[in-house]
Image 1 (cartoon, one colour):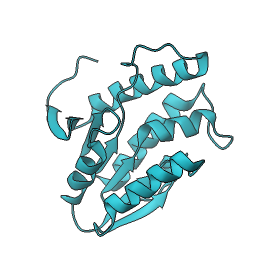
Image 2: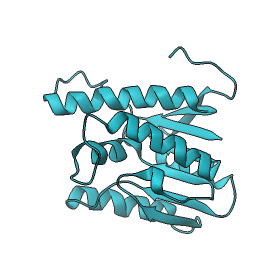
Image 3: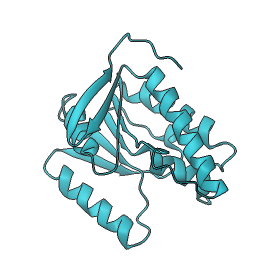
Length: 176
């Protein structure tokens, strides 16, 4: 089962995704993709650690190359935007030209290994701001990945103001 959870920053999507993953059993792998670079990133990482404390997650920090992970338990990937940024812009990543296909293949491989995967992603591009070329390319690739994953997903949820709304259920086709 593949579940995609999307929403704006601060919407409550991470908490919802964690609770959803916990339905799959007591042993859930939490794949953390945010690099601890800078005070703001560390603050967010610390907040997420507090959120998942006591939930029984086994945390694996993986910033790139998720297809090489050997995860055989239900898992949650937090989050796709960080993973993609790492693949595109980190020295150990695959680079901007290969990031979309490599990330999509990594998710396909991971989902097949763990059988139950919850992916957290963000809504991007709705702020109406034009960014530099690299950021615009990132936004375009993330949007495409979101569509690809939503198409493959059994369920898709959007979390708005802490309220999860199911926008795709198993067997429902996508326009893309």
